[in-house]
Amino acid sequence: MPHLESESSRTQSGARSKRHGIPFGRRTVAVQSGVAGSFIGTVLVAVANRLPDSNPWKFWLLLLTPVLSVSITGLVSWVTVEIQGLVRQHRLASLSTQLKTDLEHALASSLTSPEHRDQLRGELERLERLLVKSALSKVESLTAENE
Image: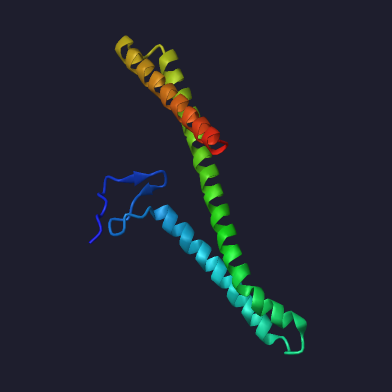
């Protein structure tokens, strides 16, 4: 029996399935892509079967349906992953901007005690370190792709 990952295992998209150790997000993309490809393939076969046998398009539709179905599956998968990445990136940028603004407002507040102000400065520095580390990681991965 294969080793199952613990509940503490996480990916960028969230928790993993306890049963298979597969990230939920990847499984969802695979299912969505497969459904799209199957749907297109079914529609093309249905259209081709309604054409008379003398129509030259019937032969080509039936011949190309598997290739088109697989191509659509790959395209939908790629587009879905790219959109999820952009949404995740936008959420991170929005959340980090809001958090930085909140920390700066709290630091500027006359109601903030000196002890709390020190703690907030530490949190702001931690946020900035995380953002720089994340940006460096992205640059490293992009430069590694070009080598």
